[in-house]
Image 1 (cartoon, rainbow, N blue to C red):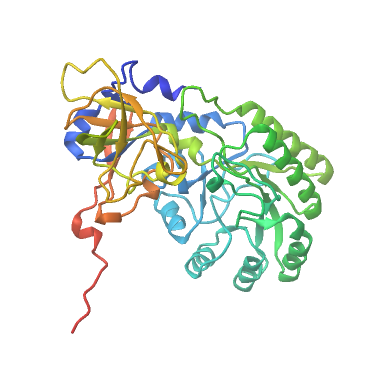
Image 2: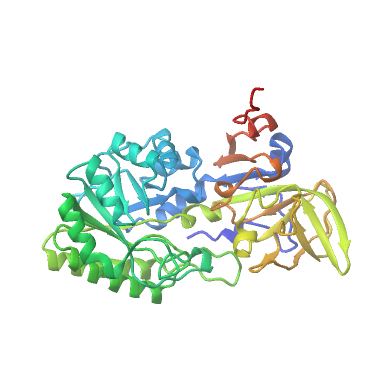
Length: 436
């Protein structure tokens, strides 16, 4: 398994290339800020999960259609949480319905699955129109689907009553989470599905991003109990996502072998009980793309505020929201434009251009400003924010009427623009002044 930190900065915090391409040249060609993705790293992460029957990408992590197309060519299927994501998957070449990834003796998998806690009206229409399989996170979805698609097969997403994650905001289980059907309501929900004429063929549990094996073992135990409540109609179980990604050197990598063994053992026990094969699915998001992406931003000012030195760049929380939302840490390095980069490191806080005190990349959860040891930077140098390929561009906004950044895919040393930088006119293209 490749190490993302072996392809970042040198010990002095200097980085000039990404995936074999010169970063300064990319910045001059495309402007800043921009996201860049390493296609080979994504392929490697897909290959890491080859033991699983089905790998289904949670595209909300990184939904550019070029990334989705790359996933498709690697045999990865896709999860959609909105009608827009259904449209994206189809634009990337996924078939809207039917079966995919056939393996002898195993139930086939749907190329696209819609997973949500509600049907907004547009999503329900897209599901009906294209024959998309549904992973239901609330009982009300069952009747709404049955009314439009009588006799459909469905998956149930269950909230086991507990959760876990790297932040409370990424915890998707327990009473504090809106996600999934409450575990104690399963018998009633199964009756409602039967009355509606729906067949429950899939079971899905996910308790949060960054869950460890101890918590996942409890999830597997809970899923197995619920599977017996459902019975022999079950042909698929999904371990959800949440595979952790190291953002710092001292963070350990996910135990992929232990993770698979845990769920495979659960699957085999259910197969013995039901007397037929069960497909085992995993639904990673950040694991497949986080380490493959960087954000490149230009240094536009340096200044002191009392005892703190600030490095101000042209990206902000409108470009990468994880630090302001979760206090998330991202490795950083400097791409200097001079040929003789400084050797000494200095402690700096890194902030963006927005008219917001929270527009700080070096902050801890709760909004407390921290610092990072970086080479001294000059205006015009480029700051590289690493491990930014998941929940980066997809959470970007037009706050302060800032444009969306460009996205670039690098494949075996060749770079290609896969999303143009948004223009000022495009920001307000859907707005109208009332006629008087």
